[in-house]
Image (cartoon, rainbow, N blue to C red; front, side, top):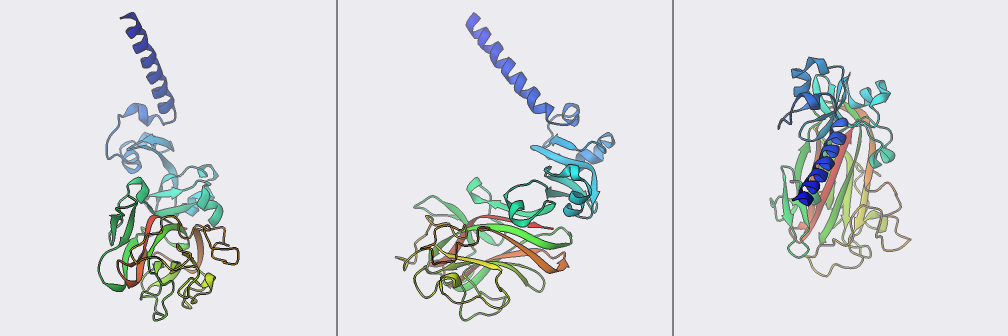
Length: 327
């Protein structure tokens, strides 16, 4: 009995210490209010005027940063006005709306320059995320790997679209990344399609609207050593509206063994796995991150399309991660 009591006391002391350490990282609001499912920075701000001048970490559905007394016209504007917000990604008041701003010096920052970005998409199927409306979540029965793919809306040559809202924020810069895989017979840039509204690529087309204007393209080549490969492997060049704003890679070195094969062993657009040193597809060390400064400002939503050139499901590109930021 004595041993059990001592053990219980030690456990209690440990849990109490851990609770104190956790709550010390939060603001006074943590001590005034219990955990409230569905609570938010906006709700805390509205219900507690005494917290208007107390930016900090609040316990909501998780530990979140609420920039109570910081406000501006964009994430970039707040980042530039208030140096103390650097490294404090969280929710800020922008044009009377509460918007999540990425303020950390994380990997995408080093590729795209500076902080103050507004995140508009963050999908990671490997962590159980759903695929957005317009795409279908599926799992390969052999490998157990899950991913987003096109909706089965056509047998050949089509795209499945999803959109990510800018929430009315004016932006001129776009930064992001996509991680994908090849399935079967894909064709990189299609010889018969020149229009941005068409299936001009096997892979991912990122545009804004309307009308569509090109931001970035992720292409998937048939194989590194055959004719329908990526431009960096000697294949067909992209349409003029794409320019140099694309990445392209093949998941297969030689002719794919069948039209139903996934190439999960070679992640696309990661700057790795190219066949030899003469192939330039992996030369850009920024991959899979892209950065694009547009020559215009816009509030348009951003559209991402998974495009199939050839017969589905034998020809396809699938993705399991996607992030998009605007500034």
